[in-house]
Image (tube, rainbow, N blue to C red; front, side, top):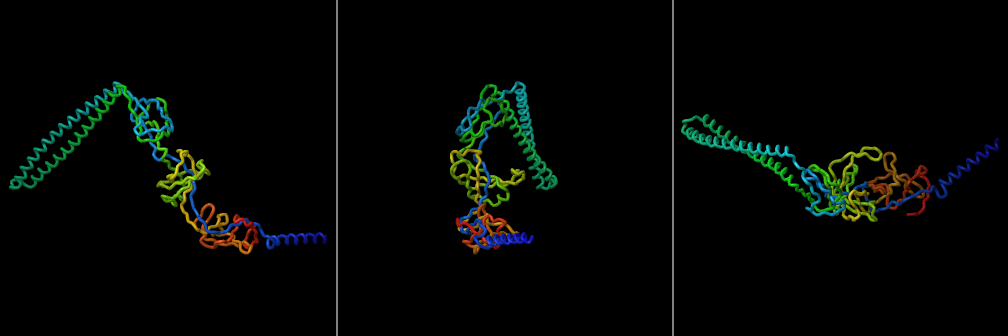
Length: 391
């Protein structure tokens, strides 16, 4: 029994000696390290974006009727004023034409009534004006009282207002006649079997044709969409708290668009209103659209393409930096392990700007300090460490 206890004690001593040697002697705990040094630090906001045409036009049917088959296809080039569709206006039935003709007659009668009323009021106003002149002359000779003069002036002012109102009524009646005659003449023109040509408002390419087949359409029905494929922009939706850090003119790096080079752009505008979007994790987020103007656009980049955009919100050269993999939060402060004399020492930091890879050091470290990156729980202040000289 005593011999067994002796062997156990020897084993414990040997194990303790091994641990002590590994920690306080020998090469020490092997860790990854990095050197704090000045470099160019770039802080950016990276989000997914979509390309779109800057000026997009929807060509719609100006009249109701039968549209002929549209021969244009997506990608075809068109010139400003080019005919892209033809519409045969819908024929009006005899009952509709009779109703429109009656409306013309009614409008003409109302116009005649308004003109007669204006002539009558104008004659009365002339008589009232002459009467006012006589009253003023008698009032100057004190034959009539001032009250009678005021009543005559009031009657003249009332007559002028009535004439003004009658003139407006006549103008409205004239407009009604014009509108009624236009409606009636339109139905008469429809019976001739003529077609209405739909022309493009600008030059560009056909982006989308909802329906090519011949069909009946109503007023305002979209026939096709046009756009200038040479003028392309990118829309990037970012978190609202990130949007406040972005300024007009900030440089943008565009990557992962499918090409073999990185594209560049500038922030053109930031939309003033945010919108709610549900993330992939089911969290509601307030996001803001940021519009980016491309400074170089490859021919292969079309509308609706997905890209990765990095908006640079801060950049400065010769900045003392530390890898973000070497920093961690402890007791509400940023900390890191600095290696001095072969041992790791817990050190508090003051940090400035941060990117995904590096952070700006404002205090706590100096140029050339070596720090532990990805420290494990085995590392504590005073632990002897070793590393491979890969810097």
